[in-house]
Length: 383
Image (tube, rainbow, N blue to C red; front, side, top):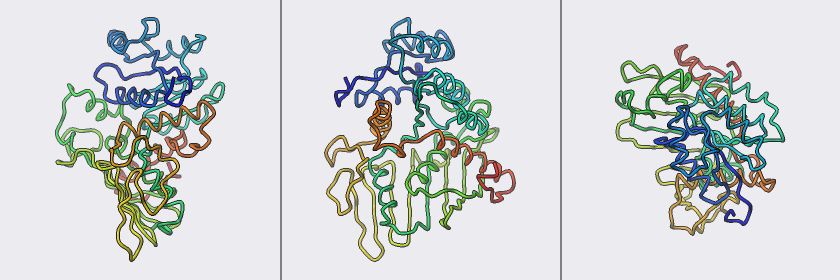
């Protein structure tokens, strides 16, 4: 049973075999609140790895599959078949499994970005899911409690009309050629597997989604400069993008995988006519909120503060005990479980959707187009 006493949702996984980082994270997130039970998997495109990986995590042999097509068909036919599936493959393998499982009536939890191309993302919007199967895109940073509170502060008018949005996501792990032996680097720097964007698709979409989630601002146009600094690299490893939002707000986004000394430096700053907020992912339980002409306030996750905490924060443990990356991921899983059970009305509009995924691909496509045209301002509606 789940922590709330509900029956666990039977879960499958596509990708995420031995040595896969994000598959391991998804499995932890699915278990965190006890809402899901992993019972089936097509964990690798290589049959030997799929079989070994399935055995390693304790799957029954008859529910270890060597292709997602076989898994979708077999599980949909079983009376005890999976009710949801996590897709944790490289980008180019998101479209096929998502389509297959939605059409089989199985809920889909897909890692970001939604696909490797904008064309495929738009095709997913045309699917008519069987039996009302639902879709979740795991932009996990939207699950942080204080990001939920930041969203509510903006929506309440506490910051006034938004003027400036600054978001950045620097890393340094691709500052040199990682070589073909590094599987995580190999597919992320391969256009055939990653898509048209490198750093912009891998981490830039996270930064973009975070800014959109908190502010609610709709993007009009981008002016982008995408660069590949490492010799021979085919995709960008550093991105500078200016943003124009509807209503007049302006923004800047920097994403880099060659910023030496930066481990995972996601941060967001939002400034309006009346106030501003500042948040960093490496210290996610604290956020600065400043009203113009007044001292800064340090807001803490679950703490006693002058502004009410967000009802959607999903704080699990008392204030002062840190919650982080895995818990934020787990929040998306637990709230999606509530939606699957028909009990998640409070979370509608909070969890990243297929439409968010398509917009993320529009953002990538418009940025790539802008960069190819000497950073010409490019409307998302033009791509």
